[in-house]
Length: 479
Image 1 (cartoon, rainbow, N blue to C red):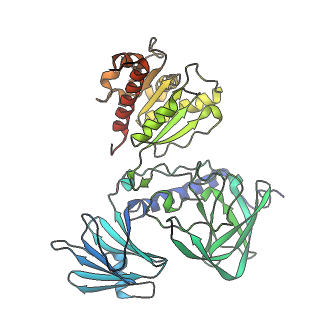
Image 2: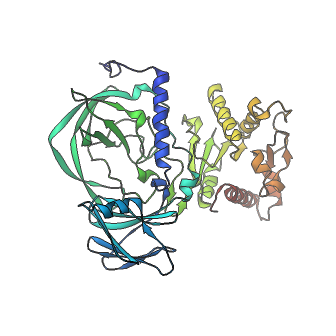
Image 3: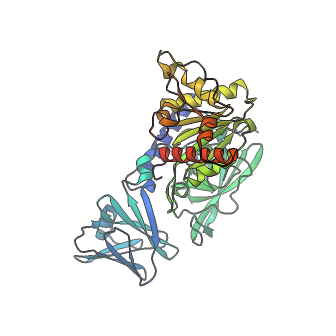
């Protein structure tokens, strides 16, 4: 029997979608808290007996067995965070905090626990214990990732991804050693049972963590991992009913913190939790992320038809610190949500494209949305026409007379740029024609003629390298 048919009651599409948006909004709010996961700026593991200090930090930390001693630097003020103050009043097996003197404080946390320990202005130091490894995480309520956070992209919401499952609890919790997001660190986990359900015409089983009395959770892999989603994702199931039945709503699958930051120590799924299908539901891979090199600058590159030389241009984007999501629409690849991208670039081959009218309209609509939010947009080759058409849309022109069509004689590889790029000092001198809609047009051939090079190929290489570097400086906050 189809899993859709065995769900006794299903809310209307409008009500279901509204409830999903409430969930998504709450999820974004939880991510964007001042000292939440997006505020992380560092993680350091403490060695026994060695003194550790953060650059610009409030003092020094020394590990002494399970305990960590903090000594305040002269002329610096710091104090226990809210959680630490509460622990001081009621110490327990999970954590203890004590004040040793005016300039020294100590704390310990049990394996698997963490504590928001020391607060210094807008910076919070968190103490954590992972399988006996003791570390400190630094949170900053003014962290770049938190400050620039907009949204987490998701797949389209569909009730086809809502299925009923049978929960079978284990007689006793099953202890397991599992991997984590940090290489070399394993964690203890307690499996509470299994859920069995039908999806895409097959029966599947996933192992659960959590407790039937307080809520179940599954972490799982699927075929979207590493393509459109992170290495794994998580789903909170909730409480089983009296018949041990639960609802799995894959539209509410979410990313664990490791997908946003390298400083998370999330538990991985157990090896059995692999769904042999592409679960195109719930949260996609975050667009805005942090690495040890700093905050990323995500750029969406759309290739409307095979474009000679595009791989070398993408390599230059990477060299200049831009993180590219490359979508080849001619190969049937789907355009991702715009949330979080810093810019959009389109490339098309010399002979145009063979896309359907529907796909062309989809690209044009995306560009209209992009330009309405004043994100930088570039269109190269035959894809430059998309930028011209989008700029003439009523929602952007507001009744103004605009330049009709793309100028002639721009050479074999024209380049169109949105108004905010054309008006920027980095590009203004390179604009050969400026439309009344603000779209600027660049003649690559002309710039190559002016490049100091011995050969024609070398002149094009110099020209593209210069344009990519200028573009990176425009959109990359750290370049």
